Amino acid sequence: MIGIELPTLNTNDSSYTLVEWLVPDGNSIEGEEPLAVVETSKASEEIESTGSGILHVLVGGGQECRPGQTIAYLFESAQERDSYRASAATPAATSAPPGAEPSITKAARELADRHGVSEDELRGLGRTVIRTADVEALVRRAASEPATAGRQLSKRQRTVGAVVTESMRTVPAAAAYAKVDVGQAEELARRLSERTGSFVSLPVLLIKAVARRHAAHPLMFAALTDDGAVRESERAHVGVTMDAGRGLYTPVVHDAAELSGDRIADLLTGFRSKAFRGTFQAAELAGANIMVAPHTTEGMVLATPIVFPGQTCVVSVGAVDDQVLLDAQGTPRTHRFVHLGLVYDHRAVNGRDAMALLKDVKEELEAPAALG
Image (spheres, rainbow, N blue to C red):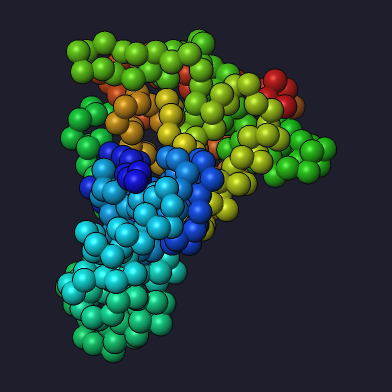
């Protein structure tokens, strides 16, 4: 008998949700293969088998589970599994004991998070399996009741809040801003989009421009250690803040300086789809050593994001703003500007360093031939 233990997938969470089993209870497993999907506050992750045998499920789909918990066993034969079940040493997931946590379908949990339905409210239904219709009934009932003073935040939003709080508590942040003419960059993005078929946008070129300055500005891609030193990185791994209405995610463009603009564009397109569905893998959210925060909604001029703990700076960009200026001959011409911001950890980065990076990125965007 081999126990399948749940690994630590996210150090910020004390529990996860086992979304579904990919292999039915009692089926035969042939070596290493995906067994189950587990959801943390940040991503969904597949759990693989640790050997071969007959699967015996201990934790049902939709239930909460803890890092290190045994969620299933693998038996050498069906006879060994039957003998174990007969001994009733551990109840299987299919016969949940009284008082056990209910099984919540993925769609029901997503709906509950979206409407702020708490775990206590779900448990209060008294059902073994909670489906979308059950959550919808709770939402309708809440809408018909007088408004209350508060609303329960989703687990994902509470995780975001913890990161923000840690940043505010530990990072002495300062900021600098630059005004950038992006007319040529937008034209390059348009040409690349037509040539490659990928959606190349200004944030795509910004990611590339930031990554290309890794060697010239290593402190901006470093991590501050507990002993007051900085640990520099060998490559530029650029995280991108992204919110498609399902909570804030920070997927990572790894080795961004080595990628073409259309390849970065394709990655961002995939990330947006996963942000909307909430289907990121943990590896896609890990490893960033600098962050880019697009705030490109029309009318947004400036943004001051937080510096993520473990990083030294974050680059922000606002929406494009049209301005009419006179050229050398006195002819009025329309220019396209954005405000580029850099928020930085003042323990590792000084204002001179910050302005030097902003100046270099500004030059990349205003003369963007190398970004194609």
